[in-house]
Image (tube, rainbow, N blue to C red):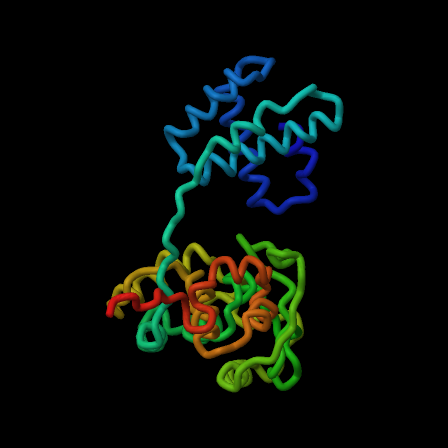
Length: 282
């Protein structure tokens, strides 16, 4: 897995963890110095015993990229992993349903009335109202907002406590709704600094997304009797509701940082009222 070490300084920690996990599996299972199609198929079969098809495919893609790099460096003469990637068919998965307007209200009220988790109410309102990725909202600083909090710049994200660029390595800027502007103005301290977090953790520092999801989010949804979906579903919910309100898909893609082609691919059924079969019976 020399490619993993080669890229160590260029990738984030979570990607590096994935490289290390794959390297461990290869160290345990691949004892042959010569990796041929038989060895590849045996390794693929072993992966299938513990990983889903999508995880298998992701692992093999990384290994295949490793061998491509090795070919460029003259370390190996061919890449036997490419064919293995194409052999794995990932079955389609139904996307979680977006939260309805009633569920959004129930969740926000659940947080506001919670003895232990009311602190996160503004954070949850911002997630639903902006369509930001969780890490983008966690990493938002007062300096990323205009003086009157009517505009926001999204160009950074925080994951596992570390600040980095957005998922797409692109920034975006857009105007906020009146309700979000009022929310931000009401919570902004008088003596704020530009690099202060807008939504810090209860005891300061950055919000731990795992802790928030597994404790606050899960329990509030349970008490509100809302079917559980991950916090990331707030983004899916924002896009679905925005499309339903007739906002241009291109405008939504620019506000959420989606690739327009990906947005059209995943949300085609929500655009212009959704796909509907014609009535063919008399």
